[in-house]
Image 1: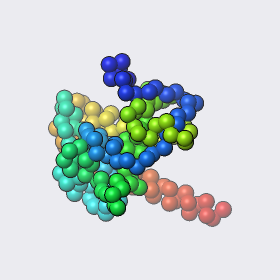
Image 2: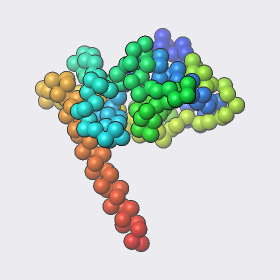
Image 3: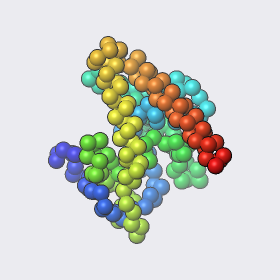
Image 4: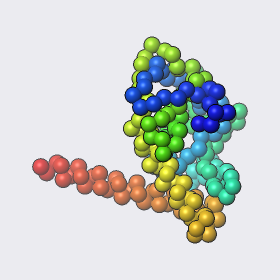
Length: 199
C-alpha cells in the first residue's frame, strides 16, 4: 500500500502470524465506506436470498461510476451501516453471513495486490487485534479473492475500453458471465461427486 495510506495498516508476509480473534463488535459493518463487491459476491448473495441478481439492484447493491468503471458496493442503511447488518439480542450479526462478500470474509486482513500474493495487510484499528488467539492470514481465501477480482475488473475493463460497452451495461454483462461460471462450476462439482461415489 502507498506509504501515505498505510498509517493504520500492518504489513504481513507469507509465514507471519498475528494475534487476532473476531470480537463480533460490528465496527467493520457499521463504519463505512461501503464494501466493494465483485460479480461473484453479487451472485452468491442473490442465490442465498433466492433472488435473481437483478433484484439486488438499488435495494442491496448500488453501483458507483468512477472514471468510467462501474464499482458495485453494498448499500448503506445510513451512518455507514451495512444493509445486511442486523442486531439480535444487542449482538451485531450479518443476515447473509454464509455468503458475505469476500472483502468481509477477509477483514481485518486487507489485500495488497494480485501481483503480490505473499503480502497482506491487517487493519490496525480492528478491536480484535492483540487478543490471546494466534492465527495465520487467510492465504487460501486471498487466492480465491484475487481470482474473482481479476476476472471482474479485467472483464469490465475489456468490455468498456475495448468493446465499447457503457459502464453499467458492462457491469451487468460481467455479473451474467460470473453467474454462468458459478452455475457451470456447480454442475462440474456435482458431476465429480457422482464420479467419486461410483469408485
